[in-house]
Length: 210
Length: 213
Ligand SMILES: [Zn+2]
Ligand SMILES: [Zn+2]
Image (cartoon, rainbow over all chains, first blue to last red; front, side, top):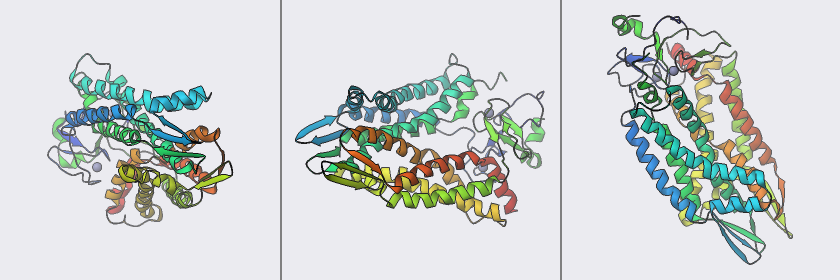
């Protein structure tokens, strides 16, 4: 919205003593509780944002441990009993020559969750620190985390589909393992952690120098 | 732009702030097919498109119909050594239904069917009066806010990729064939993506506000 022209200095709603709606962007006087346009709750910065980020992040980390230790998939094929963990499943796909799918599974269930833990932790720490990357870079990281995090749920769906599909009597039966539950929880908790981070905090250090 | 004038109620309604970086902008009428971005962080604030309400509404209705088909028609069938098993999406949702796994079953049902369906209904509910004229329905704002909030939790497209991975895993074990529901689900994903891209949230909020007056 270039209406005010390039020459006007950029100011935040908070600097102007106003509070903006996160849903429909309309600004209100400080102290307003609900948005006039959409009825959403107003807050200049989400209260307790960082505490909630850390709480969900640690919850997600804790349940990620059993997700990797316990079996995700239990297969009974012609009398053979096999239990696969997340990493084990990816390694097995790799050994069977399905390199592409092994990569998808490995990226979605190992690389994305771990980089997501690191990225959210870095963003939450960066809010308080002055040595972090430029807000533009941190904001890009935030958007990537928001966009990609949910894709980790793939592995849970794979287990659900296999357990529903592979029910062939004596030939092959697949059961879900307990890791499916803790992995699903871990993905959900880290999504909640990312959603708890108020993106405006990322830009606040930048506020004075505009 | 002075601070004193900004906080007076009359002028105030003409300002919006970027949801990402809180930078103030003057609220303006954005012409169709133009895109307004934040001057500070570049976030897209508004991108109204011609006939977008009618398009989004028809895509949402199409998606709902596809979803009904996807849920109840046979999805995939598996055959090995003379034994075969047909699975519908409902079966996949019930895969975890014994004991400890029950909560997971409920979660899968929510993520791949109930939340996407609820979002589509809420969007249709919001848009019908905007397409056909007249005052928005009661609580349309609440419905639309809920639809937006549920967006990250609507995972139908992730489910489809999950199906692809699962099929590769069983391909050595048995032969797989697709039922009509698989194609319905794949079409559903495409329709949902088209619908999400055609929708400009900010423009919808402004239209709701204007038609309430
Ligand atoms: Zn609002
Ligand atoms: Zn911005």
